[in-house]
Length: 97
Image (cartoon, rainbow, N blue to C red):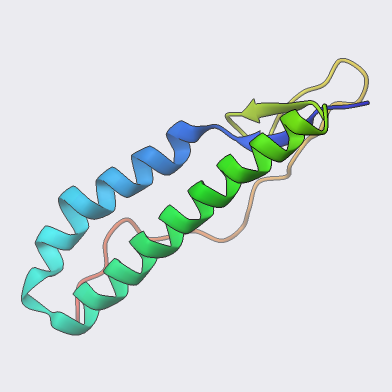
């Protein structure tokens, strides 16, 4: 049986650190944005917790899983190629522009 691909824990940790240490600090003056950021943080923490529960269930059921660092994982038998996205996300957005 092929292992179930799961995101590496570091993905959650890095995003949470950025949101908690940088984004919240910058958005502190805007209560609506700050509250939205807090909701995102809560949701990510729940997702991380649910993934850990899934990992325990897999272990109890003896189902293999593996951490993935990228969606472009290459398997010896069937390489996965994800075409580049045409959607470009701007690095910064200034209000009023």
